[in-house]
Length: 369
Image 1 (cartoon, helix red, strand yellow):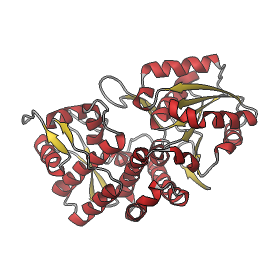
Image 2: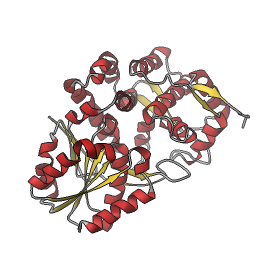
Image 3: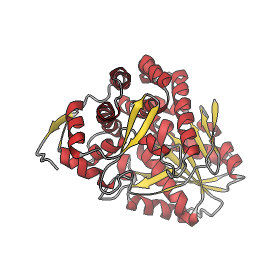
């Protein structure tokens, strides 16, 4: 097991390789003796791991209750929040209680938002059950829900007390979920660590085979990188935390325009391809460096999906992106691998050309803006 300290304003541990069987005793330790816990999980996570998580908590003397949300983006709705708040009250969860988010990133977002607001803040523990959540969303304290207007439009910053990554749970994941996690790992490597990119390229097959030694290495490296960035810019006040959104500006727009009919990993992979083209045209990113990122995506089977979209639709969907200023999207680009930069002033014409050059799909019904 590898322990990584996240040096946020309130430091906490990420434990990569912690067994679910030991969850209860760790929760007791980090909370100073919590008496009650509410486990918030998705239907799928609950099916495989709900009883293990609650059982571990109960064995440690914690009164554990459960609430189960829909899988996917259905967990991140106002109605889901109301369901969790009601479960908190029914369980008698007090200020000294703890909310345990058991599942992927969507469950973590919803559980985290409730933990940040219920009784103006109760303890939060993340138990990510997807590779994506382990390498990215469970670290850093971002919580959010979706609205009709945009993804992640309403949220808060709220750090967990513990992130517990049991690598054995990845054994039940289908390939598409492993690909989503690899996409975020590739993003992290692109902005911070060329060696990690090479590791991913050389060991993608072992990731898909669920080799725990390789998974431990990739997960712990991603957690360390994100933890360092979060420690430097916890609340996105300096701008460096925006670098973690490489590929996400266009990726989130693709998700919205598709009605969330495309997986998050595939959407962000397509977004990275667009960002690479903009990096080459705007920042002079060398072809060989862009090629390493593209090869990593290819090795993971990402970025190949062809979609139908409107360039103008994507552009307009980015209007509510948190990086947008004066109705103009700002993009995370690369001067080189490990050298991200937040770029302003990109025009619709430049964006449209990058989308075309990235060959991510077929454009329909566009007009120049």
